[in-house]
Image (cartoon, rainbow, N blue to C red; front, side, top):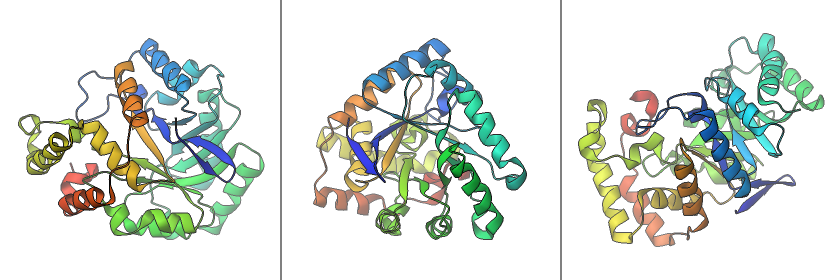
Length: 299
């Protein structure tokens, strides 16, 4: 497993996203929420594969509790959870304690805001609460999951924020357009990438699309034509594109079965960087995908 370094910490390049463990999640998900025995198989496999980073959230149904039961104090070096910004000052420490208890760990590598509501109206009192949690060693870092370029700019210029989780995939190329990766590196912010497969949309066929996403058909067909031309699976091309650009970022992947976990990790371990010319060609082919396709909040 490839690794990256952040402030002396060695994180696996892939991080297991666990929303599927607690919710029936994903537009292309036909399996539903996996049983706890299946989750144990998945976690065992990813740990054995060298993945040491797990991503969860209080809003992911029973994900924190299930992950805590399955991990059972086994060593995963970096566990990250997320919480909402509602009543931040009143609930911040309490919510962190709840996540730590459910996950059956002593502390979290990071806690992220699951929404960006506070970023444009940041209160200095927030910094005090965050610093208190860091000093108590309940968390090492604080961060946020962003949804727009304005969100990114606010997060980038916030000294309390060390980790920024962003959406990035072949259809959603705002990270390239607004140069998020280089700007984050210059500010020593660690980026986590979500939605590499756009919740499974990149795996769907045009004739199986829901009515609200039929306009994505022509882009899916173009994407699949690249896959055929390059003799790559949809997952491999999607992952290769992101990995070729985001060298110093952690990439989140989710799965609802052991077979999917193996496929994702095997695909990643066998990846070869796409050529600069091919990355540029793919970028230009999909740089104008409409927001109602690349942004799941518009679905």
